[in-house]
Amino acid sequence: MSNAIPEEALELLTGGVHVAHLATCYEDRPHVAPVWYDYADGAVELVITGQKLENVRRNPRVALSVQDDDGGDANWGMTLRGTATVVEDDAEGREILRRINRRYGADEDAWEENTAVRVDVGSASYWTYD
Image (tube, rainbow, N blue to C red; front, side, top):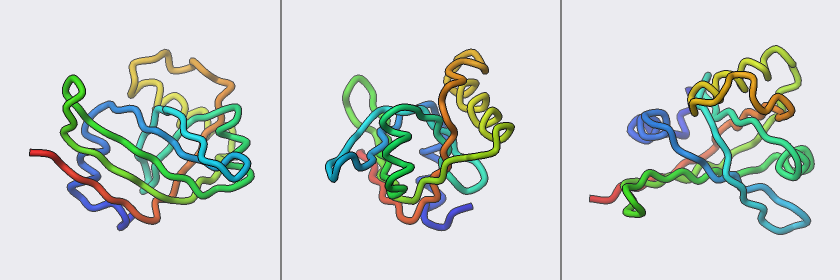
């Protein structure tokens, strides 16, 4: 487990189903897109395609933003910064895809064209609202 994510923040990150926003770099400018994620083996796992994947291959430094809210009223938020690695093993990539799809209630084999990526978190910050 990554020491970069405090235990109480890890509980927020894994305790429900949320959409993360992945920030990558495209032509020296930020590129942000919503993604589904899972947390396993001390890293955040994603499945991505298209521009996001090209960006990660060129520059693996990424950030993720996750928030929980009730009708627009924020309960907590989190920013994770780390290094993304494309999962090259096909069997491992399919298992990550299936796990993420199950988490979000999708067919396990949906979006097979997506590529699995693992983000090793280097730093994390989070906040809660009372």
